[in-house]
Amino acid sequence: DEEQTWPTEEELNEASRRMIKMPQGVKGLVYLFGGHAGLSEFELAWLGEEADEEGDDQMILDDTEVAAAADGKTTEQQVEAKHSIEMEMRSKEEMDFPDEVDTPCDKPARQRFQKYRGMQSLRTSAWDPYESLPTEYSRIWEFESFQATAKAAKTEYKNGIKADAKAGHYVTLHISGMDGLSFDNRVPLVVSSLFRHETRVTVMHASLSRTPETDDVVIKSKELVLLRCGFRSLPARPTYASSIRGSGGPGGGADEKGRMLRFFQPNAKSTTLACFYAPVMFPPAPCLMYTPDGQRLTAWGSIEGSFPAKVLIKRIVLTGYPYRAHKSRSVVRFMFFNPDDINWFKPVELQSKKGLRGHITEALGTHGYMKCRFNGQVTQDDTIMMPLYKRAFPKWYPPAWGMADTYKPTDQ
Image 1 (tube, helix red, strand yellow):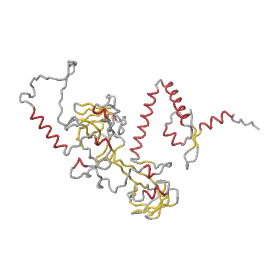
Image 2 (tube, rainbow, N blue to C red):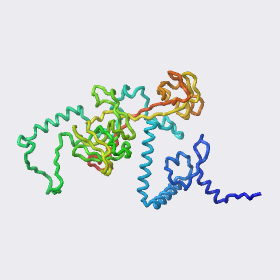
Image 3 (spheres, rainbow, N blue to C red):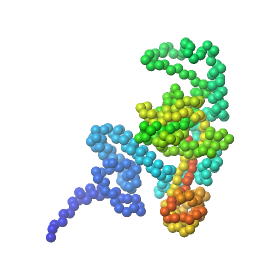
Image 4 (cartoon, rainbow, N blue to C red):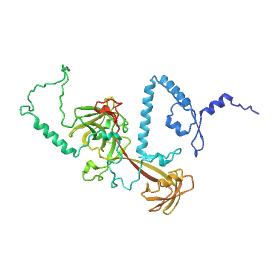
């Protein structure tokens, strides 16, 4: 008989340390080669690791330092690279599964999504633009008619120009409040003036298109970018949206709703609406978007105007799968995990990826199963969806108009 070699106690402990239990309902184990190197925090959480957070952070930091030493990169560069890869994965996931989110297992869905509501139609359903406005909206300027105000400001400026000051003439500029002005003669000096109201802060909207040369750049909503609008250069954190045609009221395009986009996807043939806090800028004015360091041009377009009452709607989709299906009736699971959540969202209309519409009839059991009825034949391979909506607002960013980043809307 051949002798059998048994592993030592140290080898068993090392193997146990590298084993990660899969989530409940998924069988099997995952063996990590080289510790936790290469796994993001999201992947570790999804795999269900139940280790001490401080120990995990130290272990990940050690692995990062080892990888940084091996690659010749600093820890900051490793963090930036990790963030870039994570944003790219999330952007691709958003393109494959738009607006889909997972229902949390450790928190009731009626609490996690309490700010969302159901709507029969995103285009035709009414939404009060002055409902539950944030504190930031008390510090901005809203025009009763932006187009009329811009026309009046331009007319006032044109009438105030002296007849002698015409194009091609030499003029003398007198600048008050300055001891001296020095500039490089090799660079042209640009002098611009402002119309009335262009020093006020409001919510500006710009229509932008991605440049094909920067498809590799991932642009997420509310992340820092550099905007060059006319002669102005300002940092901003825009919120991106797509206009919903036909959803406007008497105001036309200014009253149209916008569906918030989590990412500014690279598609040169379509335009995206960027909403951000900034000083008033009257169109026509070009708008160029750069990376925060100002090195790469990522999008270009023009200023549309200021419409603070324009409703930007964030959409999420909860998904479930038919457990049993018989004609127009089905038992759906994995959308919720307790009957209280099912009863809470019972009035919301259901949809399916094959075009069916239905509603929840009652909860079944205590594990999140529910009976549903639809307007057609339900098949096992269909996916049941529940779209929910809430209003989104631009991110408050005072450096866009020259204030400190710590300036709050409640400050004087």
